[in-house]
Each structure stands twice: as C-alpha cells, then as structure tokens.
Image (cartoon, rainbow, N blue to C red; front, side):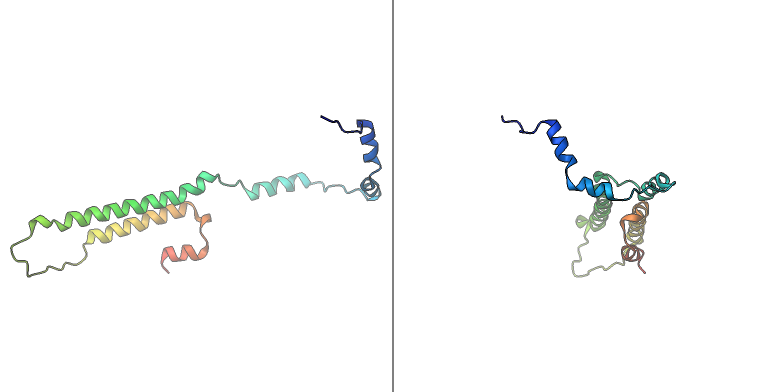
Length: 136
C-alpha cells in the first residue's frame, strides 16, 4: 500500500497557502447576538421531535383494526338475524323489515371510535379530512 507523498507538515503548509484562508482573513468577524443560545433552544423546542416510524404505522393500523372489528360485528349480527333453518312453510311471501335500531347504534358507536382515534392525532389530518369526517 502506497502512502501519501506529503508529510503532515507539508500538508499543513499547503493548507495555509490555500486562497480560501486569505479570503477568510480578509472578511470581517461576526459576533453572535447575546441571546443566540436562547433563540436556538427555543427554535428546537418549537420544532419538536419527529415521531418514530412505528408510530406512523400504528395509527392507520389502529383505524384498520377498528374497521375490521366493526365489519366482523356486522357480519355476526347479519348472520344471527338471517337464521335460514327457521323458515315457515310459505315460501311465496317475502318479509321486508326495516333496519334494526341496533345497527344504527353500532354505526354510531363505530363513528365515535373513529372520531376518538382521530382526535388523539389531529396533526395527522388536514382541514378537509377533518371536515369530511365530521360530515359538514
């Protein structure tokens, strides 16, 4: 392996001859303001800390889990309400029923859960998304 031809003293001399150093020597010195450190610390506090990557995945996963749970509940309710083995002998009549109040309550509970989850992370949604969730 071949070493650099310059020794450390030659390298330092070459750096001193660099024209950039001449420009730096000619420039005027700038002193920081007396409250420079306070301003930097305040800016760092205001910027905050970025959320970890797993937190950004967790929020959609929580909403997805809520949706999957609600879909499973709806499927169970519909399956239990249909009861195909208890049909009467008369197949000509079709009974049409109104939507059950329990389904409306289930929908309302689901929307409340979504709103609660979204309210914990308002910064992740823009104004248009929030307005569409509220339904205005």
